[in-house]
Amino acid sequence: MRSYFLLLALAIGTTACATEKNDTVIFNSPSQVIVMTSDSVQKVKIKGKNDDEKYLYESRVSINNSASKMIKKSITRDENGIVLDLGYGWAIPTNTPQGNGFAVFKSWEWMIGLRYCYTPKNALQSYSVGLWCDWRSYTVPCDHVISKNADDIVVFGEYPSNVSETSSTIRIFSLSVPFLFTQKFGKNSKASFSLGPVVNFNVRGRINNEWTDNDINYETSTKSIGQRPVTVDFMGILRYGDVSLYCKYSPMSVLKSKSENGVENPQFHSMTFGLFF
Image 1: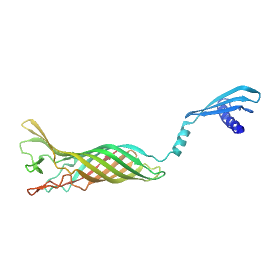
Image 2: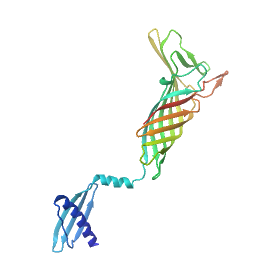
Image 3: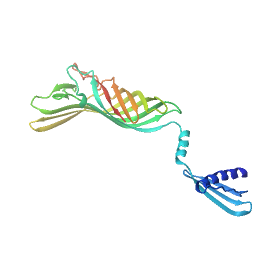
Image 4: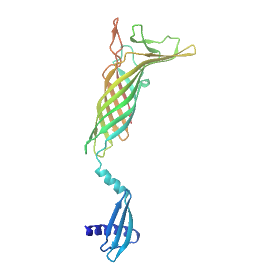
């Protein structure tokens, strides 16, 4: 054991001296060898030698940080952890009521939230689940209006011809839970794709209408519009580096199917394309 410490001290001492003085120090029969290592410095202390028990030698050796990081990286498990998601897209309502439609570039979606990702060791596949806040806005073209009639049914119509600067929008706020499977294209590749369902708990729905009449601005907000309490979307994400494109399709109608006096809520679905970070 003593000879082992001697060899260790000789190796470290030789490295230190070769850097500073290009010299070699030899210790015969040291009484004690102490090696202390931190993240950036290694300290060697040698006490006593064969002809002087009070002899003391100390040396400091800097550790290569990049080499240390490489070692740590090589023994670290594949990446797991919590990521922040942010997305913005344009909504394209589909299966809209006959004779009515929505303005695509005025219909949008915002989403933000956290997601926990799990990647098995040395695998190219990841699994994740999260919680997002999602805001969706479906806007009809100018001069068209969405409202609720006396039977509490959502209906489409038109603004009077004497008003201007019109806007009419269905807005839905949801707490969404994504379940995504991600496949990487290679161990060192920056490209990947993700697929999976997103469960939306639609906690709030409103109809916002704005118009101007005789230079007076009006705004109304209608609650309890009969949105479905839970909907399921299917989402796909194509990623390269830190920027991604996403597509999300909602096969379920935004509003509940409701019939009173032979009238139903308009049934329409939604498809969204956008950027995902």
